[in-house]
Length: 489
Image (tube, rainbow, N blue to C red; front, side, top):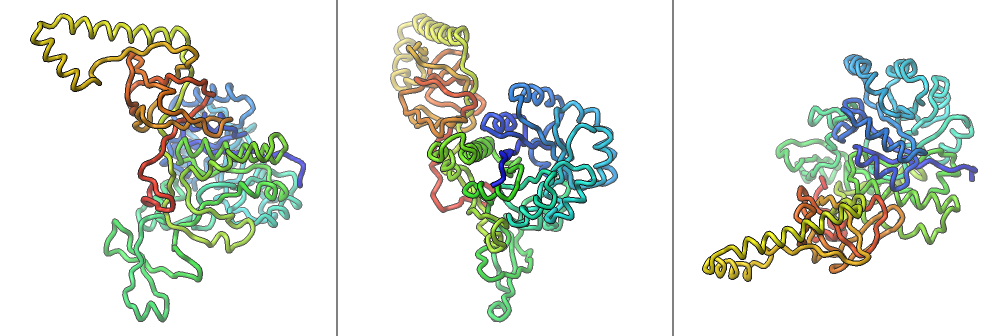
């Protein structure tokens, strides 16, 4: 085994995800800049977000930032990039990830101190190509996903001074190194310009035009669910259970082999994935790598690794690393998770902020009673009957509880007080909070709430302290194990 520590590189489609990649243990994160990244539909980075990125880099001073400029550049793209250079220089970028050699001289001139990494889109899978990129001034090659571990070892032995990076987790493209023309063909949206419509994962039906021909020659056609009457010819090979959708790569049980092969960086796919996905996958690989390096035990890492089953994923594979046969195994196009991301937990409120909440609660309750007491007897009787039938209309002031903690709470899905909360943090696999050990409080009125919902300010009042960077998940009532609920989830 080579004596080094591998970098963990995680995806960040926006500033929020960038925080969670760093908080949950990534050594580096990769982002895209608007219009120049192969994940155009990710939020990417623009306007004054460089200020937030700078602040995050100060908060996590040892973490790196890689920027994907991995589109195929047209002339107009080159000119657009040149026109935005001064803006890009505002970002604290440690490396650019590129596939198009045309942009290289521009980057070398304008960003002489920023490293260049070859994108996986370049399909670099042999040592002669790596030598060529090294001669051009590249510091790292992100290898094509079609390379095996044996080939990686051969490349590292032949070109020991260049860094090698490879994907360890996430979705794979059915096309060679992701260079797919299918999206452009069916929708006019080119994957090579960052507009992939994921046509390989649409909901197709196999249509037999002629049963005799089917039996004799295997002649099949595809019909996509929302495009009736449009047929596309397909050849189905031996042992294929699906035609287009590849399995997700998952190498968490094989990190020692990846290290022995000479990899310098392990890359998690997913700039368009959720905060929940990015956080849990990053955390699992962080703990697994720490165990590999002897920083923690395998037993300590195990609960975090097990949580990979609780993020949206397809059937897994080791890709091309051991056998082409593994890479050829396909799956249904859907991915699913037994959980919903309920909320993000922010900073603990200061004593003054908590006092303001409790004061607001007392004032709200007092004002309610004052208005009630001002009613005439008949109106008061009617009001009392209404409140008896609808007790939720009576504001209940939040009361201070000894030893409890109050946190800002950003709801993402509806949650009510009868549910069990599962709290995810960087260093606790799962922290369960049963009903009665926590409360929702409206911070403006200081009154208790039975629910939290996106768009409604809320604070969480809870018996136990919570680590920074916490996420809250709840069970998804619609989840059935093994039953995927749609190709676009």
